[in-house]
Image 1 (spheres, one colour):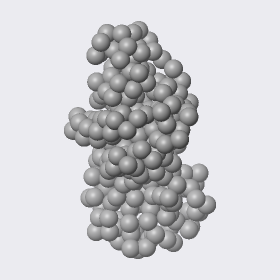
Image 2 (spheres, rainbow, N blue to C red; image 1 turned 180 degrees about the vertical axis):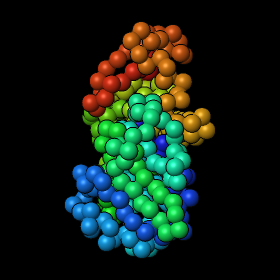
Image 3 (cartoon, rainbow, N blue to C red; image 1 turned 45 degrees about the vertical axis):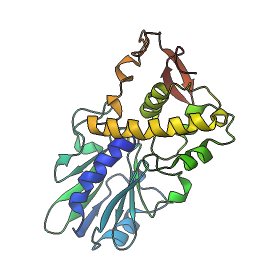
Length: 259
């Protein structure tokens, strides 16, 4: 967390600053700045700029300014706040309180108002002109042909390929477990081994899952979520869930119906 759904919620909140002019750039944590930019360089690039659009690609929030685009990443515990309001009150594995020491980056606007990132674990970042060419197609808008291309030739586990942001941007651990559980596909399957029907089915499940869980309120609202624990059973067929490490992430899946 946050995954594509949470960053989409951040994008909606960030739309409130479109049209505002940046008065001050706040960089209390220099380590949070990425891409080689310094605090001075960030301030020089953005001060006096007017926010023209709030966009998202995968897990990256993009603020256009008529000049350099500001890219914001949120790691595992980053939250976006605007004018004191959080898009998400708390993340499932983040802090349930706010602490000024967690404020890593911010923008103050002429006439008042502020946007900032609260990140207890300090795993996010802010950069200018992020290279979106390093990311695959956005998981929410990708077509079935793009999905096939992302999976093609892969000998490694299917889950690892779906988590690879360079292949497909936006899906994280919770969403991939939910998607594969719904699709009836083992996370251990070779990604390049899906046939055309399976790839089409997976594509439909990805889109349907994102739409449904967005309406529910986030990546932690899946049907599998509460069962992802020792002793958990598949809510579909009652089979004991299996726990594996796939792509470096803890993975829960049902050996009964996921093949």
